[in-house]
Image (tube, rainbow, N blue to C red):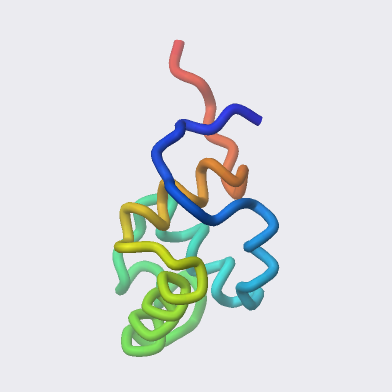
Length: 84
């Protein structure tokens, strides 16, 4: 796996620090969904989504949502098609 080299810190092994629900929230974040969309997709309320995002950032020692998106991509949580 070749990383983008943008995140500083957590590695793929730290995904085990997250619950399955938190991994779902992180995948949604990495796909660019807003909190209200994540809530709808995962059947959560928006307050719970915000709480889960905060906990993801805390557990992975990430500074913000963008760092979480980069982390998700670098750890292979998502496989996006390469541009042609």
